[in-house]
Each structure stands twice: as structure tokens, then as C-alpha cells.
Image (cartoon, rainbow, N blue to C red; front, side, top):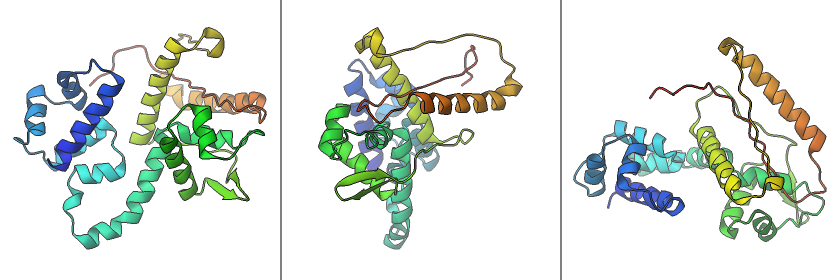
Length: 249
């Protein structure tokens, strides 16, 4: 089994664990190819060109290291691979940081007065596997966003933010994860534990940049007013603005 087959199979297994009713046909639609083409690729009867591999990697929101393997960089010479290792490590860490919510939850938990500064405690508070939390902590340490001295974690900066206008797969994946979290919490949390509201109005598309600035300012004001170090329960505020019309493919 080559890298493409292995990664496609693993991603299908991961998606099916979240949705047991997921079929190969739906998986093919997600990838933007026919079910017949997917079947041939998985059976090794059809080769995947670098162009198609790049498109499939984007559809699957693969991290940079896996993407490099997926599109064929694993066939590069040893010297080329060695020269790319540091870059891939940094890109991979940044991708996971932005696209996976536990990192920012941990960054907020370390500010709590009751923080116990152990991966086991973070895992218990977030109801996550210890391995997932330990990987996130290690990544934050590698990126210099956390330091650990005298048995205590400390944030290197008070706040972090991402860009708005760059089409970034890690940010896109993060937003998709937000939507999945909202859907899950609507089903499993009582109404007094969460809040979801929306309004519909007419907006001039030309004023979108100004509206985005206003939203960012409102988020900062909200955080300044309500954030506290006397809690050990991190919350995530997600605001979405989109036109009410069908999207073009």
C-alpha cells in the first residue's frame, strides 16, 4: 500500500468514527472525485498525479508534513529531505496550533488561579485523551507560546491572533471544527450552558472590511469585560457572517 492509499484509508476511518453512516460514495464527493475513481485509487489500480494529490490534500485539510508525503515528496533525496525537516516541523506545528482548539484552551487554562500545570489536569478539564493534550503542550512549548519554569506554565504573550484575508487551510479547518463543535454542543448541552443567536439584515458587501474591524473590536471588548482567572472552564465565542445565498462550486 503506497502513501496515498494509506492516508486516504486512514482519513476515511477517522471520518467514519465520527459518522458511522459515512459511505465511500459520500467520501468521494468530499474529495471531489467519482466513487469509481476513488475505488481504483484505493485498490492501487489508478495512479494519482501531483496535481490531483495536491487537490485531494487540500480537500482533506492535511497538515504540511502529511501533505508533503501525500503528493510525493517522500521520494526526494535524503539531502533534500534533511534540508526540509526544520521547515516541515515548524509548518506542521503552526498548522495544528491554528486548526485544533485544545491549544488555545490550554493557553487560557494556564491563566487560571487554580491551574495545576500538569497535562493530566488539562486533559481532565477538557475531557480529552492525555496523549492529545500532551502533544498540544509540547507543540506550544516548541513554538515558544508557553514556557515551563519552576513547575509552572506561563504564556509568552497575552493574546494571539490569525490573519483574515489569507486563504489558509489551517484556518479553514479551524472554522469547520468550530461548526462541528457547535452542532455537538447544541445536542448535548443544556440551554443554560451555552448560547447561540443570530440576526438577519442587509449589508453592503463593499463595507465588509469595516464590519470585520468592528467585530474584532467587539470581541476584544467582550473578552476584556468577562474574562476571569477565577475559572477553570474555557469557553469559545464564534461569530459568523455570510451572505444568504447558495455558494458557487
